[in-house]
Amino acid sequence: MSVPLPGVGVTMLVVDLARLIRRRFEAALSEVDTGLTVGEARTLFYVWRSPGQRQAVLAENMYVEPMTLVGYLDSLEAAGLIKRCSDPTDKRAKLIKLTPQADPLLERIGLALHSVRSQAVEEIPRDKQHVLEDLLQTMKDSLLQEVSRGKQK
Image (cartoon, rainbow, N blue to C red; front, side, top):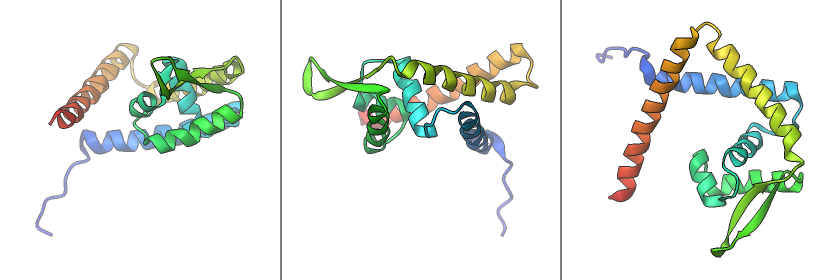
């Protein structure tokens, strides 16, 4: 082939890193015994960060299809960890809220996340960790702006 072999570049590094972090997060979740899948734990975490959101908004914020989210929510609701409430401004929409039973699991999910983060950045000086987070956030914001422009067309 006459096309030169590309360098790894930031894109493939980020893709590979995301997969490695997900794999490590799965392992860390099993170590803290939540009984949840990665998708369910992630959903619970997002509800904790932004309680009372509509299902559609939650799916968009998590970058998952609404039907995928429904499966996670069904499992979490059956376990008594979340509840779906009618939106007072639109009875067709459901707001997602945590139940008190979610608290111990959120603590364990937090431990798993902390473990993964600590391992991932252990060799990066603290002052550079902030720079890394800022750069990654800038990359994310740039991609989100592109998505937003696409929706406006």
